Image (cartoon, rainbow, N blue to C red; front, side):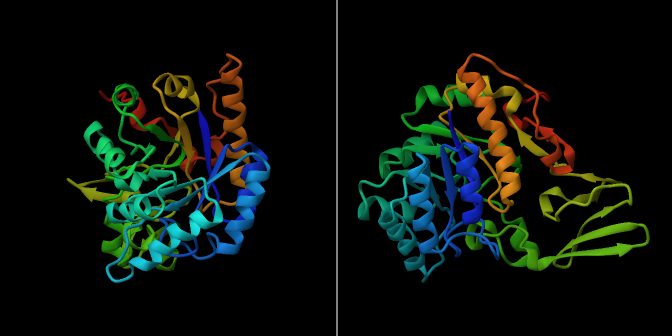
Length: 325
């Protein structure tokens, strides 16, 4: 399985290459990608140098152009596609139907992947993107079980890429608008979920309050680890009880089920975290590289060595193993 690793900066890309990535994915420094945070992403010149460095070490580079163009500003997204092809990107990760059509018509030889932002999780949807736009790989939403992925791979003609480590997204990926209710900005249109400019922390006695815009997302006791305030990971009061209604702070980690994912026909493993630093990238990529190399030799160690990097020091296999069913 191909190891697809994140890079939010040139330094992180170099770290991912050195740690054993097969592919590094990144984005331009604008609203065309779903991690449009200050201090992240690449200029055209930086990406050109990054591609040259990666290719020199036998590593591919994918460009995430996976937000939805805003009316009247389509040329920004069109230019991102054109520039990616000119730079020599190995694949472009897209979500918007209009942009997929543009890429296919303007650059028929370009390799196109379907972003998780498109939220395509069934045979009919994936076949549509393959037939209409020549999509060669689909990044699956984090809602499918291993059995569902195996069945899907037996029925479609494109590669599948699944998330392997990092933040969870329990909403319908590509359809979530929670952030826009609180901040006016969403990942789908603006490339940001819970933008840092709207994040605030307050001390309230012995407790720490995390806020997003005008909304209190969580209140932490002094002995609790304080997390980043995103609405889907907030604590809410309902039915006279307080708790995590959508999702507890935890990270996805598929180390234990890597052989099962390979058996299900998965082509690539995606590590989440373009907003993370190069030290995080080095450790996570290195751990997965070692695990995949052991599997290639017929060995497997199901124990993860990444628990200290998991959100809340807690990890899960998510929907891949539906223990609640």
